Length: 150
Image 1 (cartoon, rainbow, N blue to C red):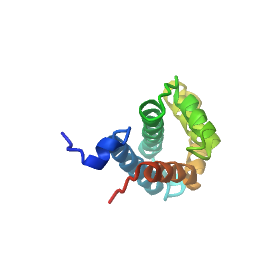
Image 2: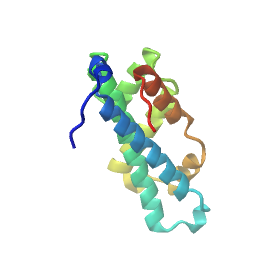
Image 3: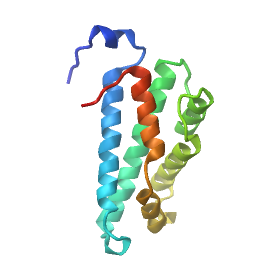
Image 4: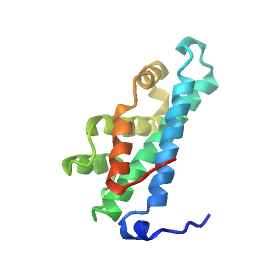
């Protein structure tokens, strides 16, 4: 799909379409995680537990991609990892809740590389909490670049 950029979008050092797509993806994943965790843990099927795992991987990839895109395209900094990226963005006061965002990325790493040690109940419990750190990230990006998603 090809996008036409407005004059305003051409003045911004980042690809707004890319950021809008990642933000929409993050919000879709959060909605899916909320839906999956709306049932008691004991009633979740193996497929639902695996779906939660997958959604967390997608979530971490999307927020990490947002961070990398901004760091590279706007700030001229090339982090070696998502955790380094969030730490850098935190040091520049662009994002808050750096520790929480890094925990999400580390959980993603465990899910991908050491999935056999994951305690699904702990994952379920953690997603039952809110997603404030992620919403704060999304709002900061939207405000910084004038992104409005309808």
